[in-house]
Length: 326
Image (cartoon, rainbow, N blue to C red; front, side):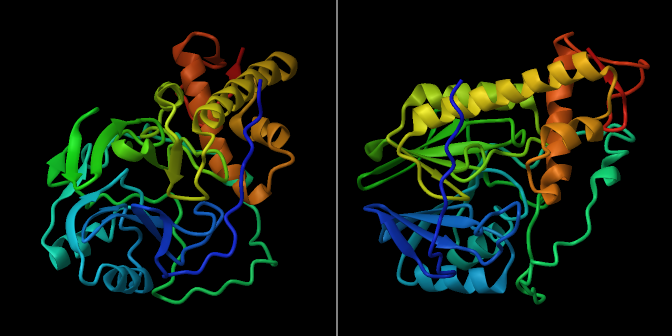
């Protein structure tokens, strides 16, 4: 199995539109965090007539930066990859400001969260990192994996559908559920480019948090992207990837390896909770990331229970504090 090689994104200048390809500009929001890396990248596609992908978080500084970048442009469509709070909230402002429609596979899926699913997650809490000296004001807040439940697209897109065509730019929907149930990537057909949202990130693996996130669906969607062999991937977080097919296959390998580690852990240690698994398998990972890691491990375990390869030891509900057995 090949380990994914993550790449950094350096020399970020917040709020300035950077021409990253002939048809693509990127404006990065000032919301860096352990979830968003350097910040959320909003993409502007085209010239004159443009499309905006993921307007981003509700930050005054990012709104003003986009207003400046789009001055004199005709915004023809807003494409949203999914409804996390660092991706879709500024759609409401942009829709009104530019009199334009929003496109997505649908609103955030209201999944019924089983009672007590995240009981025990607090076991992985750690004190604030004293080395983190960043200061936030009321308009510069850090966005984590919270959800924008207010977003409802004007137009619902389906897999393979041409969402919009501009001179030299044909943009098509590629549905990729997994990180969230309504996650969608978008192409520029002429450039063999794919905007991957949080489905494929350039700098890290993706958190898959149930019940909205599904590990089974996520892995299927990774296979789907790997089979496309796009020339370039544009993640919302992190740098572009020109090794999309091999990198995405390596992400699949990484998930399969992690899944096997969970199975082996249960075989060696016996019935165990998610926090017990995370403390060992993620021992080399920043403890600040153990709670999101726990959600991905839980998603792996849900998949394994559905496949009959793992069970809940006491026959109770699936939750972080349950004891899982091989």
